Length: 463
Image (cartoon, rainbow, N blue to C red; front, side):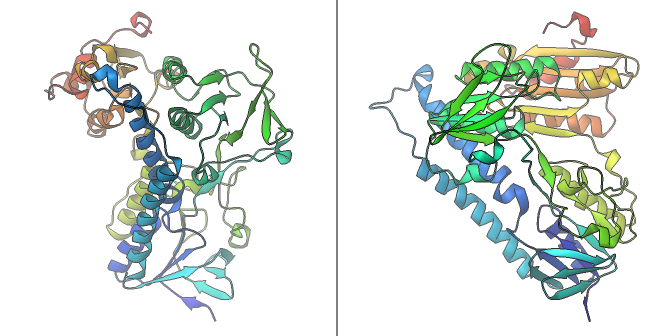
């Protein structure tokens, strides 16, 4: 006979543990199943360890530039990769242990270790155990994609997880993929002293952004000595002794590049292929993402999917918001929807990109007549005082309603400053509201009202 619970949660990522807490506090019995590391991608192979590396890389950058700020170093400096890795490992370990301890001490929650597989719509198998519940929440996350590329099985390639195991500074790191994960690692290791080449199949980096954002990101990376190869239509791999040759075939430059290490960062896929979803009748799309409605319910009554595996957002904050939506609807009598939230995210190169809402291109494609405001960071006092003036602030507004449609802040503290725009959008505020709001000097945020006061037709805005 199966063990029975009020709810089963598959996965201890960002959505799973807080959902377990809400359900148990509501008096339910919960089984939480985890087959690998508690805390999910963010804690173990994503945000926490990588942003710890970003901090170390920034420290190296500041030391190199110290004389610009009037600080003279005697005898130079070294980058100790063992110490850097140990610090990142410690940050992840503490967070992971915290999640484990939290769940282990949660009254009403039974932690089950192992890989779960559906045997019916309300029952999963974990080894020899059978667990049954009228409510099942899938929170199994995702992993890096390894596409079928010529020669890919003939060489050793790193991914976002195995990159974190490096305790050496590569001689030459080739990053295949010009988006968030790849660019963050590219700048990290360049600042550690590695020669870095980024290879991107598309015509520009981070193609989901407006062209001038992509161009500015490229300028930032190239200014630090990173080689960027876009338009790489025929990426292929071949062993070259202990190194790896990456075929590029760009219109200009050498047709291939040889790296001591190669990071493959070309996308993510959901961890759903071994869950036995067919046995429960749970529908997925062609890529394996679980189909969910606006309240994160699957096509099978009593089953929900949260986090990276549902294809409705691939960020820690979207996974946590999935938990909030499901908990509010189930336990608080609310009717929250995924489509009520405003898209927002950050790219953690340095300086970072903070993004919210629609890009200019997306706004046009959605049929909006728009006005745009833009100001370079070299005209932002905080950036000038810090000596870090790369990037710009850009806002997009509906010309008819004055509604704020979106914004990008590429520059120092852009990931924090963007939240004032996000909060205004969330409460239905307008560009006029932003213009009338007094901000603190001297900050990056103080220039946001000014940018909203300089709205123009897009064609009149200098790029």
